[in-house]
Image (tube, rainbow, N blue to C red; front, side):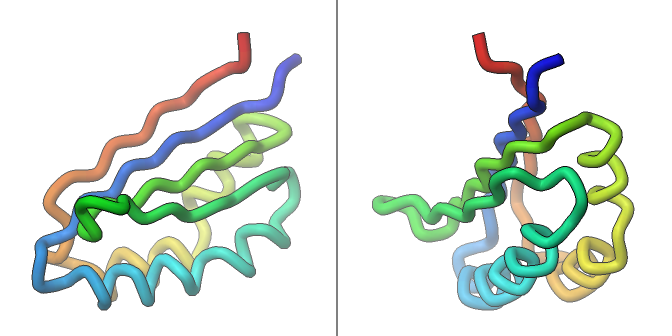
Amino acid sequence: MSNLTIVARIETKPDRVELVKKELLKLIEPTRAEEGCLQYDLHQDNDNPAIFLFFENWSTRELWQDHMKNDDLAAYSVATEGSIVDFTVNEMTLV
């Protein structure tokens, strides 16, 4: 079975960019240490700093789903409540 690739796009309110960025950066180290995490990279749009993108690779969908239920993501959600304009997640497979 192929790895699962996740592309997560987060758009923040313009006045909340630094807050959200700080909270997103907190997720990187613990997530990279999680079972099944092969890649977890955060990007920020060059033209619109309010847009962030996580490019992730996981060994299985189940381990990614475990990640989505963890305490770090719950804390991120609380810290950024009311700051996010749009959030989309695409589950993808290499072709």
